[in-house]
Image (cartoon, rainbow, N blue to C red; front, side, top):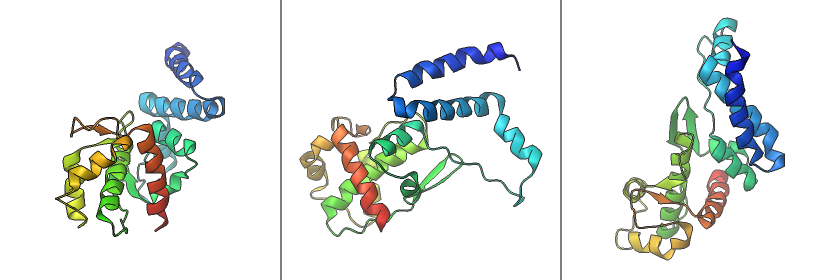
Length: 190
């Protein structure tokens, strides 16, 4: 491996990290450099294969995207809480949470916010967004769908979203992310 090959990507990582708050820089640099090395040079994967596996089967570790980690740190939420809401393995994310509130409006908003989190978890760079169609179906599946008021519930809570004009890409606003943090804490407890 030529050290010159590493200089440009490392400089890019440094420029990106310098934009962050000082207390996040070192950890972010380590994560991004580790991610780059794994991707480009398959360093970690080769080590794991060479050392053998205790169980005979090594599952790929799910890497929580950096945007999600930053969000969790901003809101003082432990990463384990997210792992209690979703089963995450390799590149797969599946919800395992249970909505226990009896108010359909609250349940529908919780599902929308958690669906935005699920979307962001799926791939590095994904936004905290959801599709109204997907949320509607999840609400039906979980028996909390209020057909008569479904759209009105989102319009009443429009401050949680940047824009409701594109039903396929409803992105959370800053208030929506704050509300998501509260929902994570509420739903993960149960």
